[in-house]
Length: 340
Image 1: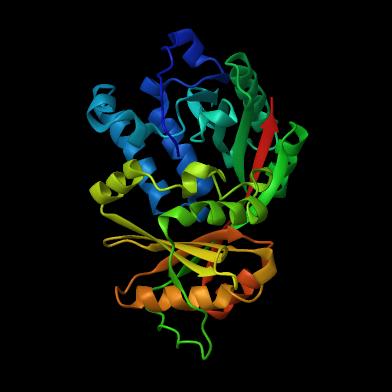
Image 2: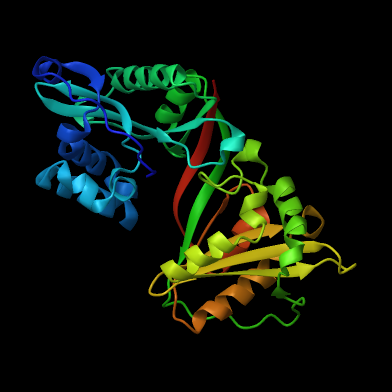
């Protein structure tokens, strides 16, 4: 879920009582939207999603004043605006809309999220109508593009989005390895792995441009392949310190020692998962994935951390390594984009 920036104007009682589509009303619709999101996404909802649903219910119970107390960005997420479908005063369909959390140099973008229809009301065209209304709204707001994520196994949803003009960029899988798994043994032959120097960020960025181009979803959901992702930043450093996060970028250099052959970003937080991000130059594909994953898992073992990584499913050498090291594939999503 993403940052909220504004509240919709309250609707009249006549508008709220009518069956069919209408614009979401933050002050009155949160509980119904939370119920629908939980029902629709229960099989794939992670802890962050469940926490967001709990927050929505809390805000609904305590009233609009709590929006100020708890903070719009943390609680409302993608429900800045959008549309709901009501039947007899009950919310049975929802599409949430919010600003994309991507660099503004890439244009004005919006996220489509929480596309859900109650099981009893499916196959009636409700999702399509709500999507059309939402896209019409963001066009009027001057959007350059819209993005969304779909469950890769949900072909009817993917077909709906393609029919509306969205193109599929790339399929990403989220992998998880429990802290109860034993640390792997060190490989007999390991490359020299060291921390990236600050002035080497351009070399790492160059690899990302090749293996994670933005037209294929970039670094992942709402994470563009952009210089700011790799360039050292005091703001990011201070933010990490304040939140208790640490970030290390381990690299293997090419034989000429001037360029990076592969990198592994490890983000850790006390009491939380270690999150990995792996980039391997095509010249070294199939050679450095296992050494870096092996190295990361042996590092994480000292803190008894679970480990997660979100990675393109079409990167076969990395997928094979993750499976060999007992990672469990939790869910798979496809990133989609519509140029406006």
